[in-house]
Length: 307
Ligand SMILES: Nc1ncnc2c1ncn2[C@@H]1O[C@H](COP(=O)(O)OP(=O)(O)OP(=O)(O)O)[C@@H](O)[C@H]1O
Ligand SMILES: [Mg+2]
Image 1: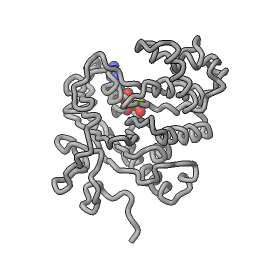
Image 2 (image 1 turned 90 degrees about the vertical axis):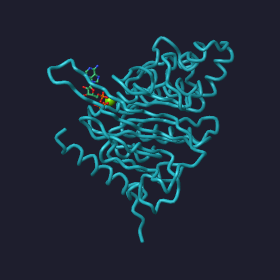
Image 3 (image 1 turned 135 degrees about the vertical axis):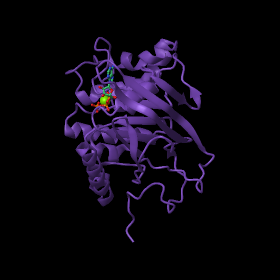
Image 4 (image 1 turned 60 degrees about the vertical axis):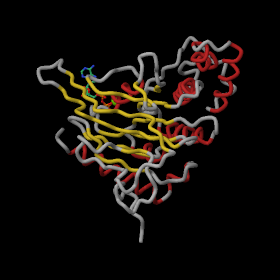
């Protein structure tokens, strides 16, 4: 019998413990991935817990409740990078969730735990944005070395590590160029931003529609590149990624969460069971197309909802 790639994750036919889990209280319609007969494995640790998050904006006559008792747990498998993608209608709260995790914003109430500990104001988790965010008056090398310099690493060591990362993102030969459009292309500038964020070897990397401004061909190339950095043993972050593109989500992700809105809930969570090593040929597989089509239908359903 053909396997249904979209079978519910709480289906007892799924033998493996899941590495991501949604809390089952308060969020209607969500899927509990660890029913009692499938306790979480002990190799799994919590990377991020969003606990009973509430967010209300009262700056208009009608209060906008973006989150009401929203909870989400993201678990980690040791020494293995994972790619978690958030999708949902515009305005449902995806960027807000990334801002909570990064420390750029605090919810009205609720807790954000990073590796089980409440995050402090000092911590900042790196985030790549849609807009190019490099320092135009610095070279590629200076841009990538900067986070290390700010941490107090000596200039020579910072440059050495930055060069290693510049090679990982395929920009060696460009290190002395200004990190500025059009001296570097849009795709190259995003790779500078990715290298700058990866150089400190973060355990978590947040990416908010980072490839939204790129043309289709460059976008596909950079997706392949982003997957390939997971093959580098030195780089195993948990990436939390936001996109509106179904094919991008399927190509990159190990897990996809689809959020409903008004207030936000997790409507669906599913795992993408494609090979770890992904190149362009994956896009032509039947499974890939099935995932993309089904995801497209789910997103269409969300769009047709009033909220
Ligand atoms: N500072 C603010 N003041 C008032 N409302 C805000 C503020 N910041 C965010 N919001 C509201 O919070 C909701 C969620 O915004 P958010 O940017 O997280 O959405 P999103 O899912 O990332 O949308 P998109 O897909 O368009 O980027 C929106 O309704 C937005 O208007
Ligand atoms: Mg957004």
